[in-house]
Length: 293
Image 1 (cartoon, rainbow, N blue to C red):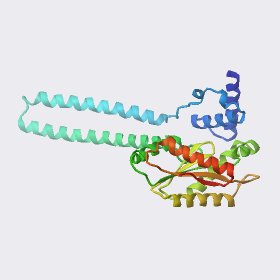
Image 2 (tube, rainbow, N blue to C red):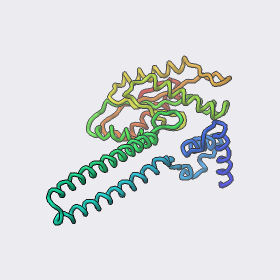
Image 3 (tube, rainbow, N blue to C red):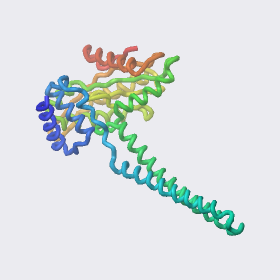
Image 4 (tube, one colour):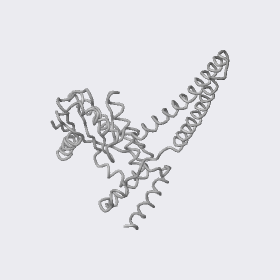
């Protein structure tokens, strides 16, 4: 098993080098899984071996540490200055005390404003980092973690009633053929272009998620089934008319899709499984688009 993992790791690093990508955890995991899948050994591997935690930006760690130290430092200065004022109250002339209190107030406000600015900057960086953790690094659409987060929030409102929510699963036909024939660089190119086409043909309020490999989910919140179907049909028609050019390769793609709508009491598994079953039926019947209610 160790030799197998070492072999896949070597091929992963070679593939990343060819594609001019750094071996960041998210890139490495995706490429490792693709190669392991192509070698038909994915089922032999312990899933825990493939659980790679997202990379945390070192600048944010440094900024957080620096901000905490600054808050502690200024907090101690303020406490020491407060003690001095209190200790001098009995000995200081009222006018001098008034003057000292005014100075201390100005000093306090200045330090608080400086700390607020530092904390505000840190919050901005942390918010940006959190959003990046929810984005697929290759296609720049949302990832599976983001889908689970968003669906949980929406489905919480649908325990007692049907919601105006539809989801569609889209899967590129014969995607493995492109990877096997042209290599993973072309496969990456295809996924990027597919994501761009989908983005251009949905409403700004709809969201796209990369669910895994070449499988994507579109979440149509506050939408009817008719409108969701129209969006998917636009994507299918656009893809059917599009030939992607990568260097000397001219690539023709087709896609299959399954759609379902929310039912009262749905959880994440039930609504996704229903859409996935619709996708399966579309694949085996070669209908391109299948609805399952």
